[in-house]
Image 1 (cartoon, rainbow, N blue to C red):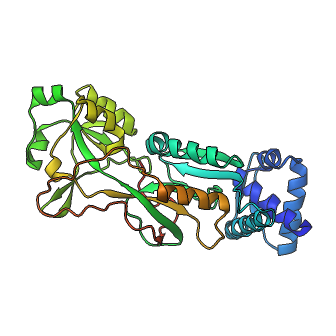
Image 2 (tube, rainbow, N blue to C red):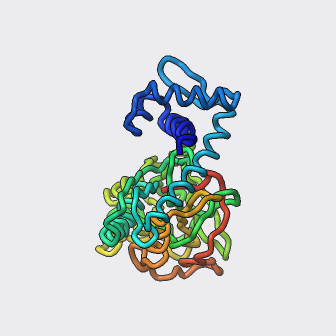
Image 3 (cartoon, helix red, strand yellow):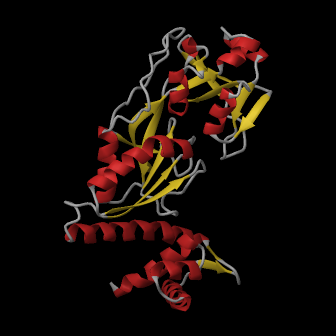
Length: 331
């Protein structure tokens, strides 16, 4: 185990961006970590960090070693857990990254039940619409919505969400109800500004079996889905949001769906985990809970689409390779 200490010191320093923060996490002195990293650099003949008086950053060689270290340390942790009998009673810290609103409204009730069933589990939950690097940030599972391209991570589809165009009855009374996509040009749009690039998310619709993207030129721009629902409630325009965000308001009649015949196909929701490593027991119990749970916030009637808009249901549970960290749209 002594031979792993320099790797652990290096990994935690890279993860926290400095010796002081890493030392606090490990309960040791910053000088101890600095000496361990220096010994590792000397033994490898590589410079792993660029150092300044305030922080350290990974070199190109350090980046490569860091990703490999994360896999090795994670597998070692799993082997130790199995030896201690943790497979029968999952334990340890489950680190999960979730979109803000989906995490609060949909995932937290499920996680609360999971923690009640497995008292040995600890939770480190991050709520953010920004993209994360699962390996660098030490994340066990990330929840992502949308179609994911092929790559080295592993994704499991466990649910789906509908995108609904919604408005307040008082707004439609003042401005009229659009019955075609062409009529949307005369209405104010409440747009979602994507945190990844600052651009407006296009509105999506189904037309004769094909998905059409529209980019309104004028409207109210917000970077939070719940704020979009509130803006719609106050009669500020038409908003397109995932179904669970507006479930209560739609059920009460405070909001109504507009152009339901042009509702786009459902978007898959995935649990994403790093590839090429053993899956810890704490992660397996979460994946199993997601598979078994009824995650959608409400049951929607199927859209009477123009044509045959394919709807992806809860989908296959098969794992698949997806894009590198941060490739999926989040909301």
